[in-house]
Image 1 (tube, rainbow, N blue to C red):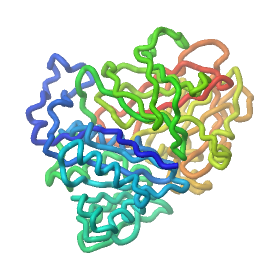
Image 2 (image 1 turned 120 degrees about the vertical axis):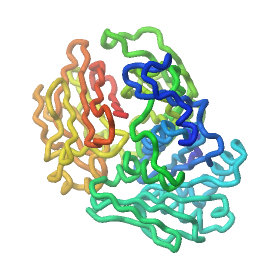
Image 3 (image 1 turned 180 degrees about the vertical axis):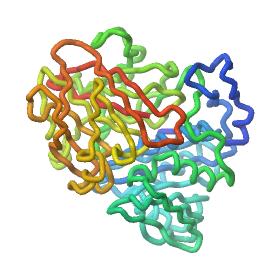
Length: 452
């Protein structure tokens, strides 16, 4: 089954950033904001942008770059992501990608988009571009880690890395292809890192971006996205409760919003408070609890939010959530980072209640030799694998882009689990992200944590 996701992010242009306030005393600024770049000030003359994810991916794989584009003037409601079942769907040839492009062109009045694909998504983009009528709708193509010739001489930027899959670059070729090879970016980071954003911005705008870290948007941020299953991206309908985390763990106070995703899993847009931590609590159509998801506070609008729940596909579950040991006395969070894989070898740090849980064996150079991890650890599963009530940090399983390790987080009585993440991305002004996550027992539900 394929699903068109017209989830619009924001695109704005540097020309207007100069008119945005960079005064920390601005009435809409706070201590975390070097500047306020409002959604309403975005450059509406910039073409819409369409992103196609790779294997086991989803639209939020581009969220970090999209918010950086938004911090530099791109209108985030004009960046759309195509979600599809990467285990069989063909969005480049089944009409899904073309329908999404036609819709965003009709909505914005443009005649061309800028198109980007990551990994498997590059194959679908190239199949799409092979039709001259389709290629005519694309002004520029961004190839994130994909090989092969670009059809119809479309102007192309190809990004890859010496640390890409199997520790080698993967580039597109062609007369109008510009190749840029990074040194350290993992396979996921090739499409998601700050360095990738810089190259994309320079390619599309012909100048350096003003900001290389995410700037604050309006005091009321717009959140929009899709509820779907992990890897196969089947829409999840039911009910979504959004509430502020507050100061009391596991306190189910009145939600700030209650939403019902549509048949495609789409929810929002909804207005939330900037720089406030929220809990997203999901239920299926029968009212069964699916799980909880937490994000580091939103500094600006994000229209590529993805709320993931376990897949019903046995092949996917057998290589992911089926490995999780559940029980009433421990928490089982799954952590992701918007800017790439977890990289202990490059200096990433993830502390759980003051204990460092990234090691060479689970997120460093040694880990890269484990099955499926040549692309890095994108989904970091933590749970009490041997049920001994202590953190041993042993690797329990590995699969493509996923690893499970033994971390004990007590859930016997309500409390907050404190998570502190330091990214190796030294272009980010404030690297440390801290989350307080209620210690929901894994016997009741899984917890997803997304560091932005």
